[in-house]
Length: 384
Image 1 (cartoon, helix red, strand yellow):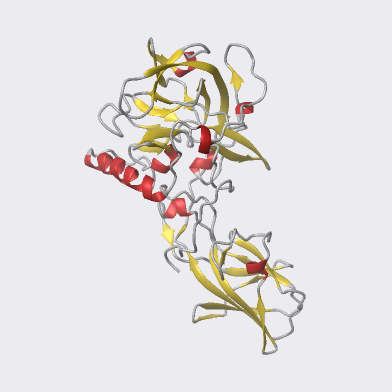
Image 2: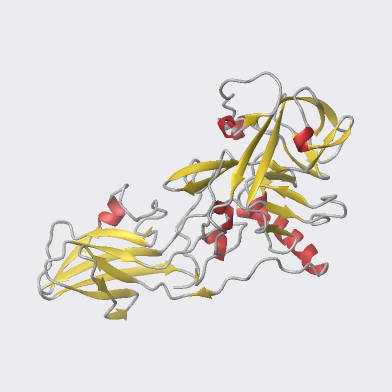
């Protein structure tokens, strides 16, 4: 128990915890609503005629665009401008709850931004040659979730092709229609039916960068600037524990605590007549406990290797957690011989009903640290 075990790549294109279309997917009463990567009202967009508030940008306006961080801007026409509304949900993780991110004036460099910038968590900034989601730069000082904002309008603008634009003095992205246009109400101009179905891999003005090797140096640079500038913390440091609170729950709801630990295995005494149990534990997200620059937002419980059921002294090796792809409470497999739970994982005894002297031995390869108290959400309000 301790550091997260490196069980291979934890990032898969198109997986549920990497939003390749840069959309915050926020659970709402059993369903979902989307907060697309966008600007909040008051953001100043650089246009050919000067800075204009994002809510005042209209179809046909000419924006200044860049091919990279250097060189002169090129005017490019706005072909669509959209608006929508979001309300924060009382969820434990700020990025999923829908809080906007505030990037303080001068956070990145002098006058970058030129004023406090407010964007949604998945909105990308153009840094070091790539687009980086701002949620991966949140340091609690100069870049933080503004928990005072519980309801807000958000805007985005689309140029003739995806472009690097400037907002509040920061190079950032125009809207790339990957099929989420339904999230918006068009502000003005002729209505557009459907989406254009662009892809980040082929149609973006710059590559999307979410790998730790690229993002962490940028994060550290911005964090160091905030520390050197004595910028105060705007977030509470979480309290962490290594205790997974690992236990079993039977079909009838009986809780079974461990009987002992030996050689990396946790043993449990199983009552007679049990056919399956749930392996229950605390959970944590690598992005929360390792750093937001780690683009892994899965809820991970413990990494389980070998599982043995001893019934009347006879051992049975249980392998369903390693062989079944779709199994309740188990994350996708990362490496041979191991699999993470999501904190409430089903383990079937594979048709074997336990007798009077059964024991279960679970090999725990990794887990934690865990947050003792997650961020409290705001008062529950519905999304418009």
